[in-house]
Length: 509
Image (cartoon, rainbow, N blue to C red; front, side):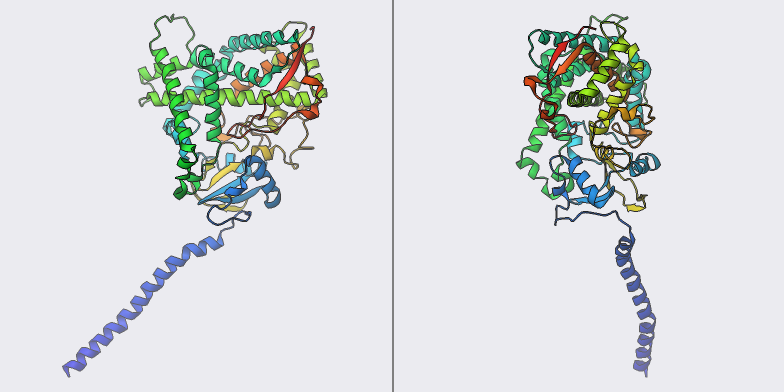
């Protein structure tokens, strides 16, 4: 009898526990399949076919902006790639760029953490790559107030005009002999000298060639996709192919140069109180006074100086190089710009910055150059901080974003005859490059728009205006405009792969 009762008791326990067990099992099973079900419900952008493991890494090619443009023509202006383990959204339309840079600016406010950026930019202590937050706000404010504001840009007018005058004197030496001028070298040297004098207080001619080469390799490395960022288990490849060794060498040599610049300023004893302070002086003074609410380390000062140089020299002279290239390819546009320059000058020997606001065709030439040749074609990559919808598509947190400004500038839905160089399209046209018109965003838009845009444009406009005002230009050896090599280099900043060489003939103004 006792055995029977025990058996019944066990049976009741089973009757109670079995439903409970199956309920827990069902909940566990639903928890496992829910992410997959949710994933099936996501409306993802169209994607090109992927290869196992590497995904779409093979689609990037030597010039990603061109390769991505071709893909976008097949898969649409909003498409999703898979670079190794990382989802990458590629945007090639003004509407989608507006959603990212305006509607969802805060969601895409940060750059992805890339190993080469951390290595070369002092673990992202600069302004361009620093995470959005108090440090970034304070560092950006320091740069704008003390270097890049309208007031400060105007205060450095004499430096720009002096270096422009020196550039024209340099060209005159070649006029009598008929020798060709290396315009790429001239544009690089002039912009470098302007930035050196503004930011560092003097030219560094003794280190000029070495520093320019370092900066070139620096920008090439920043623009080279790093397989380890997309496939971490293949990070060892960067040791085998020499990428890491190259990055370490550049980082070390740039650091030594910047340390020398800072030490020179710290140990300077012959400065007069009335002397204009350069940007390094300002940074050291802020460091000493500790006025930003947290200590500014030397690492931060070096990172910011490097930002100023990389953005202020290479990207600036790239615009000049492409503008002059397009003018040489389009003689009618060149003559129109020369006509405007010589009319505005009123018989003066040179064009000053006061004259520039009357040169509407000059501004149109530069806008058209920026449309066809944005210095950083895919802009600085961003990463999604949360799940978001773009053009109706679901974009998951952690997705990297490339905005192909190069492709947007060639979008036939925004531009008539998009492949042709037609500066006249910008005459009586409100579209500008200041971040409000997403058909033209070579400097980005939103909170992270390039703060050095005004300084760069002042350098570009003044130098280009004086070069077409004082000289007539032809290609060497009687070459025609069709013979100009338009091949692009590789790297973060895209300029001509071969130097721009031209013959200058001084004209009587």
